[in-house]
Each structure stands twice: as C-alpha cells, then as structure tokens.
Length: 481
Image (cartoon, rainbow, N blue to C red; front, side):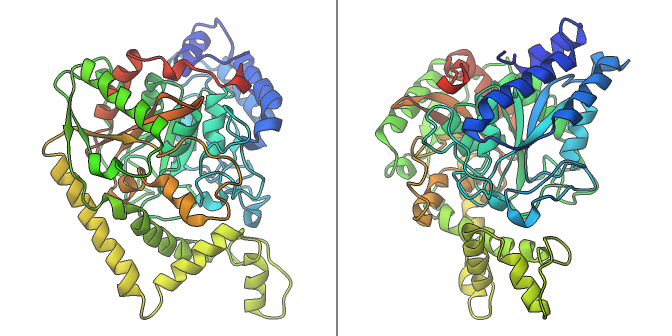
C-alpha cells in the first residue's frame, strides 16, 4: 500500500474511514519491504508505534489533532525517549535518551506516530549520507547514487512514501539538498523558528530542525506543529507563528523574484540549469516578475560555512569523552580513555574536529574564525539589500543531480561544494524552501526559494502556486511503485 499524504490520513482517521493502526501497519510494512535495499532507517520502532496507534484510535479528543494518525520518520540526531538515537555514529550506538526533543513532544501532542529513526551522516557532517557508521542510504531514483545528506534517510523515507512526513536537520543544506536530490519538498526555517532542544548539536549558530513532505500543504501543516516558543531554547522566537495554511491559495501576482545570475554562472550542470530556467518561466506565468540581483559575497559562503561549522563542532563534540557521553574505554590515563572513545569517530568527523580546533587555536583564531564571522555579516548584508528590491530569491537547490555513491568520498572539497547554493541561508539565518522542479538525466532537480527572516509563509505560498502549475511533486521513484 502506498501511503496517502498527511492531510488524507488525518481526514481518514478522524472520520474512522481508516484506523491509525491500519495506517501505521501500512507504513511499517512498506519500511520492511523497501528499507533493506535503500537503508533509509537505522532503527524501526514498530512495537512502540503500534501501541501509540492503538491509543490514538481509542482517544476521545482525536478529531482535534492536526496530525492525527500520521506516521512520521525522524532523523537519528533528534532525541527520542526510549528509542535508540545514534546520530549515525558508533560513539552513540545503543544510546537511548531519557527525554524527548521539543519537536517530538509537539509531534506526539499533534497525534503523529514516530515509526523510526532515519539514517544520516555521522553527527550530520556530510552531504551524501556516506559518512554514516551504518552504511549509506541510497537514492530511490537510482540506488547507485546518493540521496544527499546529511538527512538522506529522511528524504528517502518521504520520496518512497514509507512515511508521508519526516524530520531532518540543517546546518548547511542538509534538508534542502537531499529533498532536491530525492524529488520531495524540504524547508529550512528561520533560525529560531523551531526549538533546537533535543537536537544533537553540530554547529549551534546554524543547526535547525527542518521538515520534509510530499507536498506544500503537508509541509505547512507540519511546520505549524513544530514552530513556536520554547523556554528551553534561548534562541527560539518568543512569538507564536502565523497560520501557514491561511495564505497558501493567495497566488503570487506581483511577486518579485530575484535571481543572482553571476552566482549561477559556473559549476551548474546544464540539465539543472535548464530545469531552473523553466521553473522561472512557470513563476512568471503565475504573475511574478523575474529580476536580476547581486549577492557579491555568496561565492565565499562555502569556505565561510566550513570554518564556522568546524570551529563550533570542535567545541560541541568535546562532550564525547567516555565520561559524559560515549563508551568508556579501559585505559591507564585520562587521555588514554579519551583516545579510546574518540577513536570511534569516523574519518569525516575527525577531519572536521581537527580543522575546527586548528582555526580556534592561538595565532589562527583571528586569521580564520574572526574573519569568517566578518564575511558572514557581509553575506547577511547582501541579502538585506537584495530584499529591498525583491520578495524571494531563486536558485537551483543543488548545482548537480544526485552523484554516484563513492564519487566524492575521497574528495572533501567536491563534497562540500554540493552545498554551494544552500549554505548562505544557514549563515544568514534565513528561511529557504526546496521544491521539485523537474528532471535531468532521469534524476530530480530542486528549485530553491530563499525569503526574508520569519517569512516562511511567503515561501510556502510561492511553493504552493508552483506546485499547482506543475506535477513534479507527484512523481514516484521506480523503487517506490
């Protein structure tokens, strides 16, 4: 059974046309059938999910729940009480958090059913899911290719309809890039829109929880549940979010779409460029105007992101020492114990930790970290100036379609460049949306829309209008048929 979308599931369960148990079983059966080949899930919580479905079917207040009976997949760096949470690392293999992340609390309060934890690059450090200690996920459109990363497992789960919704996390594009490569929609909200409480930290000034869905209406409903104040996260906005569904049908007549042509001049595959150009014409036909803009510092976003993210990672991952977190290895000295525990980190995590420690060390802090923060401020100023002339900014989500597994694993620079169009939104804290916009060589292409801070409603409105005029979001990968 191919699962319906989230809105259809809620309607069916609330009217008792279908039970939450039936739909949960359908999701679990689909995971059982497809996951062995695609490796989207690290942990499947079948018993726990079915028990929750039974309780939902017996609940008296069920019709009021906005995600009633909807199965959802959760990236394995988001804490779930009593469910193994590894962040794709052997350092946390077997770890069961004693508490739920804020987003898990909100999902369950809304009636959703967490069916399992999805595969990801170790500690969310990667763009292909190949750095997971549990093996790579595979792209459902071509299983010899990457689904993107670091939230590759969540994108695969939604693309194959194992679940209609999923949670990922973003530090440099880890929701939008896999969404684009797998042909689904993914949103990076404004920094502070969704609580980070219970998200395993990588780079705290950029980390974000972000939703995946098969369509914009479901994405808006999921964001509505996740967004809002949380006193446990001091960076979280204290104001309640707007009603995201209220403006989805308002159209985009008069909207000004900015395109940074110079930034797109090099490194974009011809098929990706063609699909992007066609998507601009779709927006123009819907009543939008297309304007050229300049983002002069965008070309420096990837190295700036790398320095900031690696520096913050070197601080955040200090807790995995065998005392606070991680298995304690037998050793005669404290340093020996640290070495035994941290030897479990994968190669990419070790690379980023060493580089991060280097850029924070004496004599290099000003030359690298401080300078990167200055460029970060200039990049945000570029966006502020651009948004004086336009309402949203459009680029491809990724410069290429899904690349073969193994093709970039030995070339970290090429791997990092997969995020060339996505890191700017993380550095500037702005919201950005990826929606399917076509195919190149039979592989999905994503259109990225970046908006003003706190204006996710605008992005969702544009995405909804684009979706009404195209059918790319309805396409199913061959492995899911």
